[in-house]
Image (cartoon, rainbow, N blue to C red; front, side):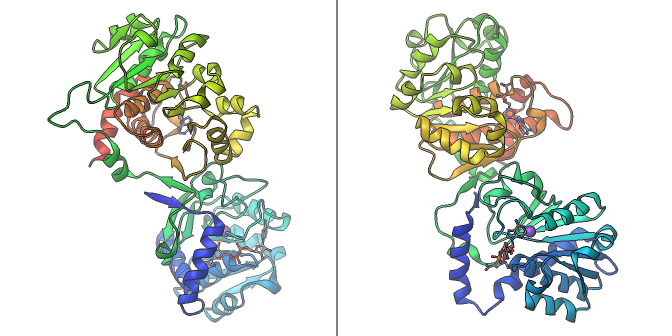
Length: 479
Ligand SMILES: NC(=O)C1=CN([C@@H]2O[C@H](COP(=O)(O)OP(=O)(O)OC[C@H]3O[C@@H](n4cnc5c(N)ncnc54)[C@H](O)[C@@H]3O)[C@@H](O)[C@H]2O)[C@@H](O)CC1
Ligand SMILES: Nc1ncnc2c1ncn2[C@@H]1O[C@H](COP(=O)(O)OP(=O)(O)O)[C@@H](O)[C@H]1O
Ligand SMILES: [K+]
């Protein structure tokens, strides 16, 4: 499991660790890891031109010490000091001893344009969001220059705790972060500014507490969650998932949700709704019922909403079931908030940003800019587990308080009509197989994202093909 901690937690852990170590030891560990990552990126250090953007805090100190290491290996290193009188004194002395030079921001443009590599040490976890105008001007020059950009700890200007970006921020190709991931490195829009992320171990792990802000499942975590039938299994013991989806207008949503559900580990898929013929034609193993959800027979979890049109009655009926319910698409609009809150069994809501915005009564852009806050807010309001879809998918458990799961296995090729229906069937099937709502949502999103990658493989893809690649995704996490 990958974890990300909030700044106040990182600071507390750093203080505890620093008290046990000689002065400056942590910064030396950070700088060593940073310099090694820069050397890997450059391939050859000798003769390369490296520019450092150096702010007034310890983030600038890291950049200066790393710059000194690169200078000792033959790089030509120039530090641009944003606040010359307040740059980290030890780091500055080390850089000068190693033969590095310094310039003021006014003289920096040529240096930045000529550099092979720029280290962004303007601000790290001490940054107050958005770059100040002088720093923003330098970031604009860097964005326009040919150099690779390595952010020190965080891309300067992004919000470490929320992933929000207010104003301008540095865009990096690589971020070298220290001790632990920060939420902003894993949540969009800030994640996009970070480029790829490399974590340097500075020994913080042993002092970090149990409560991360974010967790991200990895292959092994997902493999451990996925249901595997045993010798004593039969289709009912494996779980039956009910799909109440589709309408005369949108029969395809029913087919796609069933397609996802069949690959999600439940032993049987029961379909209720007006698209039974289309479902059976495509998936003959489906148990189709033309009566409402209450009369359909026993299920261990329901999926309601994809392509449901205006069928509020079915949504209301499903919400009275005493088994887990996943609500997606039209179902989110049709569900009565009090009925959701009153449910005793788990509820998993799966909005995309537009649907989440409608539920919260805000603009879509607000959700896209503040995904972590919005997913927690929805989970608190509805007392339901909420999976917010998008380039990084977030899953907040009911109430919105615990660690939020983040998933980034997907690809933008998944932004295709109907791929959300596949996810709802898949995650609903995992619910029926016995996973709790947080695990079903996050493992479902993980597999769905991988399936999207496998199916697309760099080219446009249809939602039915994403469903078809879930098996490949499932196998790959066990390898
Ligand atoms: N505390 C520790 O034990 C360690 C800290 N390390 C580094 O130290 C960093 C934190 O250092 P600091 O606490 O000194 O804080 P930072 O260096 O992140 O930033 C603080 C300085 O940036 C300025 N600043 C704030 N917001 C700004 C903005 N929007 N635009 C321009 N300037 C702004 C402030 O005036 C302040 O002086 C970490 O991110 C990491 O890089 C590492 O050396 C590892 C060890
Ligand atoms: N830019 C993106 N990068 C990665 N995944 C994405 C991106 N955009 C959308 N997705 C994923 O694609 C799926 C789209 O779902 P949704 O918006 O509900 O579509 P539909 O309603 O057409 O089925 C979700 O799983 C979402 O997380
Ligand atoms: K930085």
